[in-house]
Length: 428
Image (cartoon, rainbow, N blue to C red; front, side, top):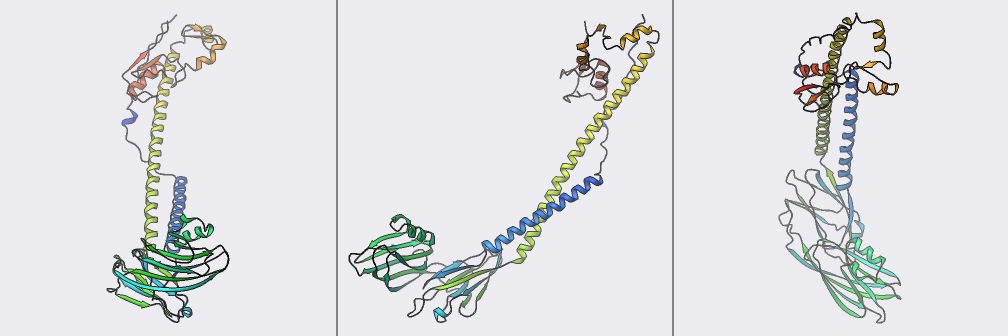
């Protein structure tokens, strides 16, 4: 029997990782996908910032209507970035006989250093299960002094001072609950109550009756803290025509609305509408700038992702080219080995190709045929896995392919670690 053929010499190849990386350009399909994504992103961002702008114009700085009592002083300081002017209208001119609030414009927040005292008198007839209320806007440092007289000594009436409409509504739901208002009192006969106010807010003075009809006399004496408008640069009485106050940019301005004192034979409540004029340049440049900024960030991240995918594709193509080169060398080796077996008898060649033929000098049973394919080289699929790599220890190739991998790539195809040696596994 002839000696086994010598192992053919291996041709050295340049490692694939040392070759320059070719430039790749996106195809027409990928470019179309990128354009569609960019258009969708632009529309989505533009719609979002448009919604934010409409929320600011119609919500945060939308028009509001409120009620002011006599001798009220309230300050509005809108942001000069979003508001260009403030507009104030008087909605009940006939009820006030032409008298209206006065709108002042100051450069900053005016101090609360003006103190004035005023009062009102009410004679009220309360039916059973009814209430009567009066609203006042008072600043911090103000005080309310109420003297009362209940006509029927056997009747009890609730007298409360509530801060804000929410507190008043909670008291109306349960008039007997004392913790819903700032001041809660059950009055009968004659007496007086006093309440100091610590916050600038709207306050309600209210009477409630749960018994038979009763008459109550109230005398309100109010010490009110007012804003100092001596240094105001703008003054406009809100009567027949609305008043417009421009807001300076970028430092801003303060709008101070002051109502006159109580008048005889006239309504002492003013229904006022406050509107804000938007600074359109802020919204236009804001929407455009933020849209372009987020759109640029989206494109930048999208390009990074595409570049990462391209590099991954190049590495996978390099691995496929390397595997194809190894297979081509293996085919050359097999052809050279086959030429040296021409002198073998034909019957021995037939035995080698039988399903139960010899492999490494041993015959396999039918049940071991499928397991044999799992032990074949992962590169050429022709020879058994008879080597392993150091230091990782992976065993995935035959000794010939493993030697070529060590000389060509120098890294393990499984874990990509640097290979030091290839050890052959000998079957005994």
